[in-house]
Amino acid sequence: MIPTEVEDKVKEMNARVNGLESIVEQIGEAVLATTQTIENLGNRIDNLSVQVEEQGKQIQQQGYQILALCNVIETLADNQDDSLKKITGLTQSLNRLMDILEGTEK
Image (cartoon, rainbow, N blue to C red; front, side, top):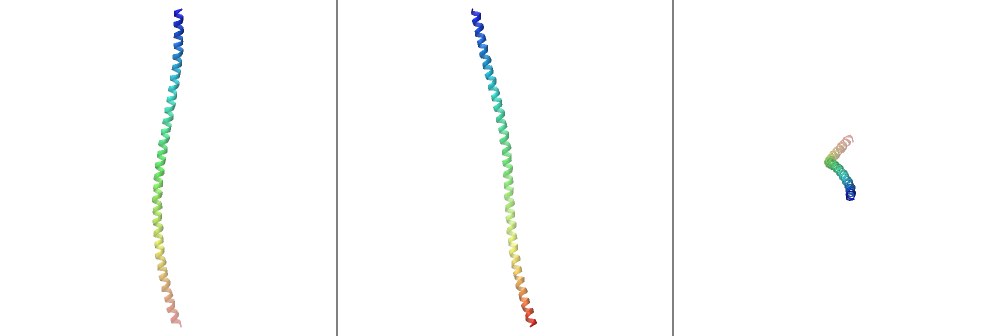
């Protein structure tokens, strides 16, 4: 009976080893899947970082454009003010000229 007991023990040990092999295989698959998921997440984060950096550059460029527009508007306002002063001077000159012409007609 000793060989049967040994055989039974060997079968039992083999069954346990097979069970452990299955568990180790499942753990290995889970580790591989987790590694792949982490790698994918890393790639997504890299892509998002690039997008955020590009958007930051665009926002900075837009800021420069807004400043340039403000400068142009300020220049236009100054030019309009100068033009208004010149028009006012011309109007006054024309009024004086009209007064002179009206005075010579009488």
